[in-house]
Image (cartoon, rainbow, N blue to C red):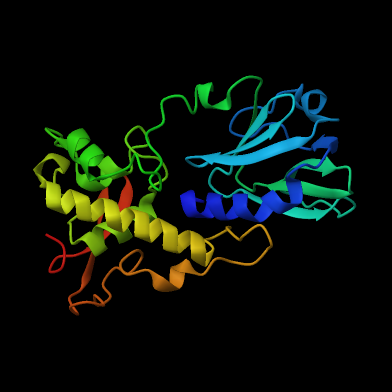
Length: 271
């Protein structure tokens, strides 16, 4: 699944091609994604100018003079900028055709993505209104996470992956941040002291920032908006390294299931 760095990489990739461009056509080949694409989408978009391309959590917000198209890449979705005349493939479900004859194309083999419309403030949409703080913003700091975690018995990994607490810390980056912070993923969030929480916040910010700079993590279907794969996977310390030696101490990396997600950690380096 594309996580926050992959979505932000996509946003950065498509923005120069979309900003201030006029929309000439909208082609919906398959409307049944996670939620059915509104039948009125073309009427809302055609003739409008794209004024901003933002991100909230894992959602992309493509704003026009008439409202905002909200996109989610789901499990396997990706966006490309292609010439409008480029032949579509089996899983190319939506084209946003620009007046300059280029096209924003959504490809989604599993069809768990979404294309929605919000006429007014997009942050008031029901999918976005209750999201937690952005991990790379100032509001996400040690004081915030420490206060939010008090009396919480939930495991710290599940806690930082809760989008009502902080958005976009998916499974890959939660594993990596906890390793670098020396915190075992199974420990209760409320048991972790302020100093360790401060360190965890710093590692989350650093891991996500480095992943964005590297172009995201290449897993299954994800490639960047220019068609090039991300390269952060080459830097992963624990994720998907079950039974391999820890880079820091040589101990064996352990994998266990937490809330139906794989957690990887070093029993020696993480306590």
